[in-house]
Length: 337
Image 1: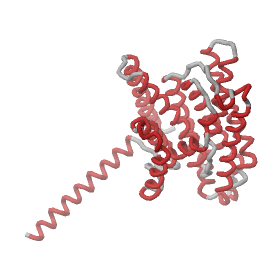
Image 2: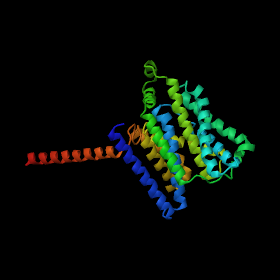
Image 3: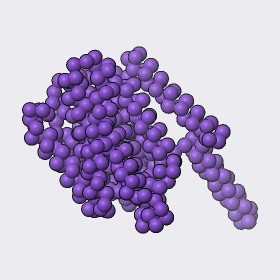
């Protein structure tokens, strides 16, 4: 690893640590009340969901419409473990999160066996059907999941620190994966699967790897969500919720981890700011998608990652451009004289 990359990692780690400490201090001081703390928690959960979906949809290039289904699997698994395990909650909670993620990964593997043989619209339809099947199963298992009434009495174990560190870990692991050998193969499959296979890439393994990791983190996000809200209803994990997560990926940029983070923050805070217009939330998302496709078809960041160094270079280019325009204007004015 080069000194430049180490320095970049150090700066990013420092920024993440500073954000964590500042928000924690503000919460403990009462400057950020419980309502806004809850919004920050949901921001973290949505970051996990958006970044994990971007791995399968943005970087791999496979349209997945059942991400809420993987989240539901992890949520119910995690909640049932902490409610019935009978051990200290401080121990049961991380075990339940890991179990929820692993179960979602196993389900993702089983779904991926037939689904990843297909492409485009066919894969989207299968994942859409999977999400609806999970919702119907959860509704019908009344004795275990509470059925349509939902599962209540889930201990409130999710806090700011848990969500922040898991979100940061998710971002770090996904970013590291994308910049690894397997990650480069994921991107080559997105660009040209036939050429990738011809060059010796095990496309079946790589596609399954991305799909399973995506499902794993969605399951963990579900566990965090369950222990944050305290009540689970199958109707929450419907097609609309999968679309909400997909919008975060599309808005931020399909192929940009930092884009997913920015979009998750915006699309979590925006509905709260427009709470009185909650009935029109899906209309708002649809309008956002249309506008993005018209003016920014690659999303806010496209396939580019936001960085302070990149921001500095962009500002420098802008200053040079403004200076060149000013000089050209002065020259043109001198010729007129």
